[in-house]
Image (cartoon, rainbow, N blue to C red; front, top):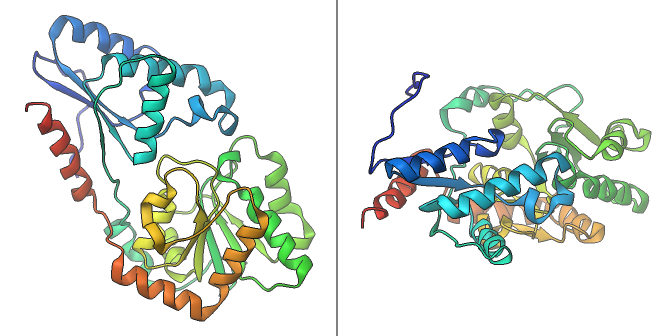
Length: 313
């Protein structure tokens, strides 16, 4: 990897400014770029992850709704091209522009990498699991926040216990996010699920790779995504996946994933029971190994370069 030196770089006419980060964190950045673009004559290309704070604000922290929406508004007016990380995000951006009567820049869809690669290779040297994690477990990766919908998994595990349905232990990898105090309390303090649910925070890449590799299967109940990287990472590891049918998630693995509604405890539990069966799980894994094509960062970079090259045509 190449480390960039900090400091200002002059922007000349005909240059392309590529923004892959979070410009909404700097309230004045877009305005400064817009003003300089009008004077100098360069081009702006920005990456669009999702429109959660603008289109589904109840699933995000309220403090971001206004600055995020303001950023999207300015972005639509001044960008020469946008890169969306899913068809779902592209549709959402086009809908955002339609609602506000904004011109919508051309939008290319790129696929972000899902290979953990060498950064986590050391995790394959050990099969050791963290204390309290059972040998048979289902894995859910993602910050515990309202949008990620861990409350549905809690309800499904409780319902399984009530009905006497055996499930693998649920291992959640993620810290405490926003708007989930009740859910976090239930996941970590309910005596009835003390042995059935384990929450791990501050997991490094090595351990994450190991957990993906050793999990019976993974589950991802999110209500809304721009992509859904844990689904892609699990498929890249050959793991069977039960996931929400919401937004961008079906784009990742097509019919290789076992879907359920993010609002149905019964559907979620049915999917968990299905993948708990070793025969069904083995069949799913065989298809994934045969059909799923993982994406590298070189692949992603090539897509970005192709989109930038189109600006000159």
